[in-house]
Length: 316
Ligand code: MTE
View 1 (cartoon, rainbow, N blue to C red):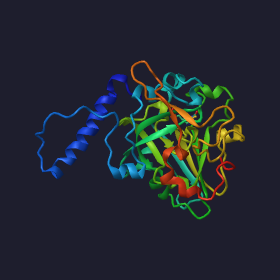
View 2: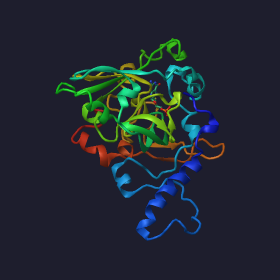
View 3: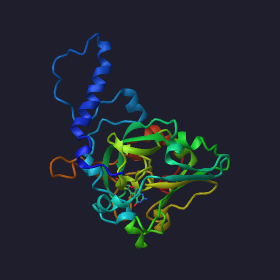
View 4: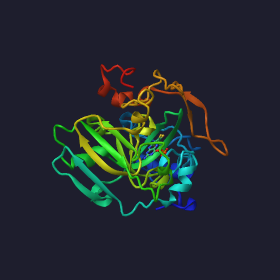
């Protein structure tokens, strides 16, 4: 499903709605009714609670504009230019869609997207997305915790890792003609990373269904890792004993590690990882200021324990 531009919630409207909801919920506590004076000028970022900030589920940093989130993409199945996916991915048929879940688990199966997500309500998560190329965005996703989906298949004790596969269909994906990657695009996580509460299976963004160029109908979002771990348009999820194949790691293991945790102290041979260009521009400007990159993309408090004692330079 492609969402026409005019149906998309304008970022300002979206932020105002969030503020209104946050403000309304505060009224009874203040002993006030809805009849208040005009709002003060809106602050730049979304309003979030202290609990949301502590969980890492939301950030109050300014959101990247919808048009940039959906117009500046990496999805090599549809071309290698940043503007290619938003044009070429219109041919991706996202319904019907099935996902095969199997490997080291008690209840493997091939399920329709509806059955896979049955009974789970998409939550909003506002995450930073940091690409290894040195740019970053702040995106309001909709999705379900990956753990909630994985548990349904009852992984066994040999399920040490989880492997993910993207659709690879020559007819729908013009980029597959080029052997830039050994298709299908593959990614993987350690089981504890996959089960971490921050790890999201996204089905939407900005309160709407996920556009094709962002990985419709189902993509991974792992906010403390470089963006290439967040695999798009998933058709298979497999519990495995050993470290699974990962497309970029297979292509150039000296440049792209299996873990690929965001780390300003470990540079990529072509890109310093110390800083990043935040895509949060206004008007015709795409990039905002260059800002320092943080360990685990600013999620160290939530995920640091999983890597305690690990040499992050060796296991990059
Ligand atoms: N998934 C697939 N199947 N193919 C891709 O080329 N690119 C990755 C990741 N997932 C990619 C993919 C990279 S490099 C990044 S930075 C993010 O998707 C970009 O996600 P976005 O376009 O939604 O910002």
